[in-house]
Length: 51
Image 1 (cartoon, rainbow, N blue to C red):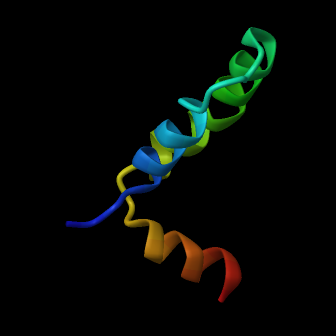
Image 2: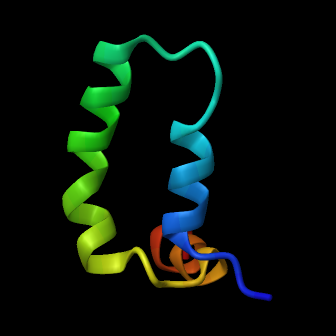
């Protein structure tokens, strides 16, 4: 099974201990990225970002 960028972001945002304001800030920051690239396999994202 392939893990997508959206799945990684969801796990990141689901961590315990994030303040509500921090969570909202992260969600707003990630929203446009995930709309455009959320379905990409995380392995591909790593190659694109880090060569």
